[in-house]
Length: 476
Image (tube, rainbow, N blue to C red):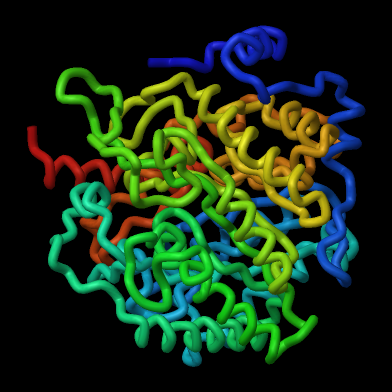
């Protein structure tokens, strides 16, 4: 079903007034430019030159040894020239068995120099175009994919609904406390390598159902890393402590935090819409969910944890929700699902409102901790207007764009110069990039991901190959 049929901001605002509480828009172009052009202090030593960010967008295009390849380098060159002052470097595995696919980036001793060359190149591109990099921040996102690791799943605990959705055997062993303790040192080792490569900020990826995110919901896990909130945040506290002990203020610590994971969804037996898998209440799993209604958020623990993260040393938070593997509409409201997935079970504006409601409540609770907001891409050319209103009202400090950066990497230049986006370039949330990420029938085990509609010369042929491989795997 097509939802985005709006011909004007006024039409969109009418639906937003009817369907949402927090989706509001700044119509004045000069005010849009002023809001998005605000500088943002991060910690003691960095002030972003504007309030726009590119989220960590994985391209699944490294070589098999985890090295940035041709398409990786091209993507970041485009981002570096795009004008956003916060370029969040995508998920980079801390060890080989922590990758989500065969072509996820992986930083190790054998390739740190290649990352260093890429980092220096990006600084040069940005400096040549904008005059300085003093107001630019590029955190490297460190990750372990946990349940979604390739080729072997590594789980933190058993949630029967997620086990069912991911075909995880109920008797599969969970990662032990000892293994987690050793993995803390792998994150520290990766932080050392990131620093050697020139990165002055790292991000701990605690979202999208990956290992650190799954630990946050491990309420029924036994041992030092499960049960109480203190135990579920132990891994993060230990890693931050080790990084701070070694680098002090020489390494800024950021975090992309999933703040509401909800329950897995499936396609209805009749019709194409999504529905939640049957669950019981009180729901004993999850993170940021109301145990009596896990389709709704409860941010009590989330706020407690964010307060701890801030006190432990986190200076920048990127607010995320949902899991793309089992409830994609929560994290990224869309017009069209990726092939074979369910249709939206709600109006996409309800999903945008959920993003704005959660990030707004958290930013208001921690006004001194700058946060990056998510959930804007479905608004298309009006994303800037919504972001400006949220920034003006103190509901977020930084406007983050994900999918739209693949189709429109220089959106920030247009935002500052025109206060508006070009409709023929903006992402239409048709989910082709996600389709490519899900395709594994490739000689290297993974198709690279990008934007076939708006980056046709590069990704058009790749999409054609992926569709043919999909048809061979799924004959009618």
